[in-house]
Image (cartoon, rainbow, N blue to C red; front, side, top):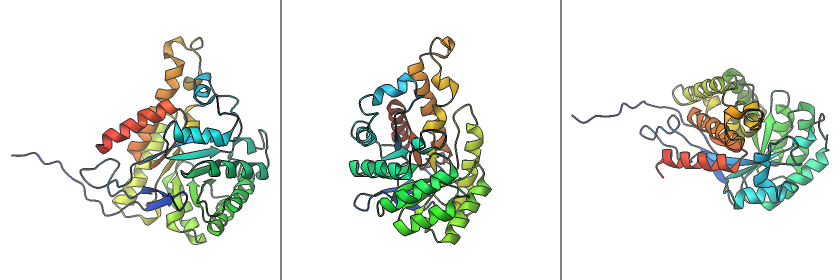
Length: 315
């Protein structure tokens, strides 16, 4: 008697969200089963990888992370072009770290100018990520939304304290929102409801559940993302049927294991490989939990994850 793989039945579906310029959009979402359960359903659009670009040269990156970008790190537009042309990423994630009032406190006008230059330099979708300071992010992202009207940027983080202002900006200037909540499925659902009530169309919402690095809370993030997918696909919860964005690069590379030198931690192995493997393993776990977009940092980690996705998709 031939063995038949038991199959679950899914009644829900993850929404398909078009991202990027109208002439060359990238589609995310569309899953009709749990991640990579291709024997039960479909993943019409494989997960996408975005690479980080910073609006100012990073000051605290380890040398192993700086080396691949040494020739472009002073120019965000050239940095973005290299990520696309040399590393073949699907998207760019512009991190506006310099706008942080506790850092360089660069102005909204400066941030908008950098964003326009990066957007003009690439054809792939652009994610624009604020510093995490609520008041400054509202000021900065509102201006960027207006200055880049029609580009269909992904604006984030959009939180409970900023959703009205940034939701209105996304509506007025046609951008997509990364709805960010602190690792809680109920908070994620509530923010999606609030955005819907504001009038933000479902096809312009992504979920950012907030993620952590391997060894620093990843298992809790995994369970929250897993519950999100269960509710969306088996319970048909329409306010959770959105693609998931995972901003993981910055979380991985701030942990001590990714940053310590050979002299500081001789038992942890080659520091140039250690951070790469931590980032790749974190990304793989988030893919298995349901991530649709991964924001990553090191090109070697990107290559490893892309190979993994290709194997799982049967390419």
